Every structure is written in C-alpha cells, then in structure tokens.
Image 1 (cartoon, helix red, strand yellow):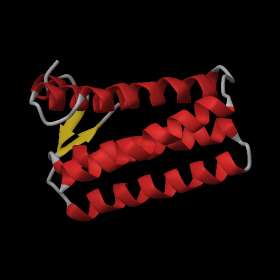
Image 2 (cartoon, helix red, strand yellow):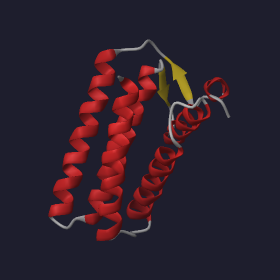
Image 3 (cartoon, one colour):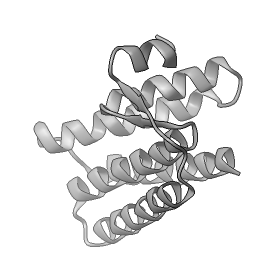
Image 4 (cartoon, helix red, strand yellow):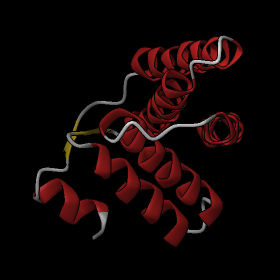
Length: 138
C-alpha cells in the first residue's frame, strides 16, 4: 500500500511540517536510546529492548513528520519505510531492523521473551537505524 492509500485508510493524517516537532522526536529518540544503554548496563534486558524499539520509533516518526504526515498506528511507519525503499531513498536493512525491533519489543512486553543477546543486538540495530534516519533528515 502506498502512502496516499494509507492516508485514505487512516494510517496517516496529513499535517503541516513543523521543524520543532521533528527535533522533539529526535530528542526523544536519543533519550530512549540512552535509557536502553542504562538498562543494558543494569542487566534489565526487557526494558533495554523496549527502549531500543521506542528510540527507533521516534526517529522514524521524525522522518514521518518531515514528510508532512503523522502516523496513527505503529505499522504506518513500516509502510513509510517500505515506500522509501521503493523510491530508492532507503536500504532494505533498515526496514528489517525496524520490524525486528518491533517484534522483539512485542515479545518482551507481551510474551516475556527477552535475553542479553537480543537486547545487545537490538541496541546495535537502533544505533544504526537512528543514524540513518538522521541522514535522511539532513
């Protein structure tokens, strides 16, 4: 589904581009990644996974805002990333990273599945993903 169809189906709403809102999302992303690092250091792997995902979520949301859109569901950000890949603006690995973090967060939150290895892996993915989102915003 393309973005136009996703807007029509209510996955996104159009809104004015607000640089302050974009910056706020990037700050939230950094905050969450820092909290993920603290959680890793304290061996709270469930929380590390959750915070890594939300760090990625906020950096993707910043990109969404830069396109004049606000997501109404988390899956909408997946749709946005897919369209950016189709347009040649983003590499597939970042979509896979986001979806992997989303799945890991759901596993940690709803099924109590979390480990040190998963938390460290998702942390690494989040660092790379967030840097890529920032480059797209430049």
